[in-house]
Each structure stands twice: as structure tokens, then as C-alpha cells.
Length: 263
Image (cartoon, rainbow, N blue to C red; front, top):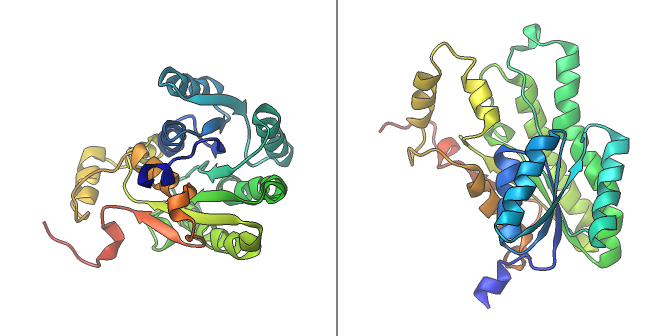
């Protein structure tokens, strides 16, 4: 009985930004838990690789090209998932981008694009997914925030602002759709080995030294990986978490739990 509570059998899930990184980890773990997964991304070749990996492991998945910042594209994504599998139970909003730079160095177009991909996209997927979830009596919305949903980080004002918005948007969804049987929760990763993190760190003069310095501030001292976030997503979408909505699950090795830490 305990194992069945953590399963996602017969569930249909969309995972945005699932071509790589945390999105791919969420897609893999959901498929392993029994869900049929729609891998959504603008990176067609890499997205198909995620699908192929899932299928090779015995799971069910399909790829749909989607620009999550574009309303028409998101509407087509939701419709495509329902047309393919007949329903929609889960939307995991993972797609995000980051541009490094202080406010005075950041172009307005970069700000707008980050807000569109990181925040507007979640409004769009929810707008089109909720009617399907409501009609079938419920569903689960997962949003991927960050430790930046709670604290500032150097040279990333727009990314930090967007991830703060992701957390509050999640809470709003939980309030608005709870009576429809739709739960909404936010996963907030810490230092996770993804292409996005590597891109950020590689802007430093000595990326390896920066990574070591950051990990030295993590109480567990360990790097996290995309599948760790996938495990959190599976739990939050499962019946084991039926009473959990409007909350954040911080998966960061204790990174933001202390103001000072020394190994």
C-alpha cells in the first residue's frame, strides 16, 4: 500500500524545459513512477533524446515542441497532450533561463524574456490546463522555483525576482483551485548540477574554485542532481501528498537554512 501511494500510474504529465537538466530529471522519475510524460521544450533534438531515454527504460513519453513564453504554443501543447493521451493530470513548470548581470547592465529585452519564460509561462500553462483538470476532478501543478525564491543572489536580479514570483504564483493557484481538487506546490532547488548552473558558474574567472566555494557553504557538502528534484516532484504529485498544497519543498542540502556555516 505504501508503494502504491507514491506511484503515478495512469497519470498524464507535461514537463516543460524537459530536454535537459532538472526538467529531464523530473520527466525520468515521473515515467519511472508510471506516468505517461509529455516532454516539452524548444530543443527538439535534445528533447527527443529525453523521450528515447524514457522509452528505452520501459516508460511512456512523447515530445512536443513548445515555446512556453508564447500563448499559441502553450495552448497547442496542452491540446496536444490531451489529444495524445486523452486527459491531463500533472503539469510540471520547469522551463527557465538566466542572464547574468546587475540591473544597470541588463538589457530590457533580457529582463522581459526572462520574465516571460520563467513566470508568464506558468500562467499560460495553468490557464489552459486547469479546465481539463477541473473537468476530470483534479490534478497537480508543480512549479520549479529556487533558493532564489527566498534570498537574493549575486548578479541575478531578474532571475531572483522571477523565482520569487514563481513561489507566490504557486500559492495563488493553490488558493484558487483547491476546491477543484487541483493541488499546486513549488520545488525550490539548491545547487544542482545542470547546464543552467554550469552556464552561471562558467562566467567566473575560476569556475572550479567558485563551485568549490559554493559547495563549502552547503551543510551536506554535496552537489544535488536533476533526479533529486524528480523524486520531490513525484512525491508532491502522488497520493502520498494528497494533503499538501500551496507550499514549497526546498531541496538544497540545507544551503539556506543557516546564516553561517563552517566545515
